[in-house]
Image (cartoon, rainbow, N blue to C red):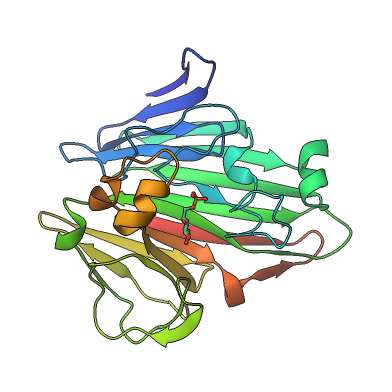
Length: 278
Ligand code: BG6
């Protein structure tokens, strides 16, 4: 089942349901903000106080950070790029079989994007919903010049309690600590008892999120950087569209091309970032 819907304020969403899972995607940002396997609790975290409004990023789900990750040197430009607040176009959807549905959305350059980033592009997100959630974010350069991007599929995972989770798969990986801007090396698995904002590098294997009652896997391709973020108490109380206690029930593991893992894309060439959650 694929249903195109509009909220009372005109905010457009697509609801998908098949025999293995369900998902909801906003046309703004191609933003998946709900994904749940049949008979299980939602895998994605969504803020109870998120905006669903034109021009404001949804807090939770999987924001698409593009064509830059984090701050731009030009501080008047939005953090994490403009793709997450731009209105994407529906391209196609299909029921592959009774357990699998796919949907493709795209964003192309416009007068508005050219003012913020002076390149012509096509950005396509193909989402496949089954007992796995797969995303393929393909950037194509339609310009006459090469361009450089950084990006992320900024997944907010729902967790039972932040103190109860462990992340495996990043042991011995170098990382940039975005709180101190120092380069460090991970020792052992990751657990949380303070604010964490790190860009892991040289990541090639599977990442495993171990929670009290479930284990979630994440595998990326076309990417060697992963951002791990939890705002903890103080930053959470200052974050927009988040309740002060929200940090307890969420954790971001972001499939990225960030910092040194930037991608240079030549005219008529493409780069695809793939992430699968299972
Ligand atoms: C993470 C960054 O990717 O996104 C954090 O590492 C940032 O530093 C977080 O706070 C949320 O960003 P935003 O723009 O959605 O508030």
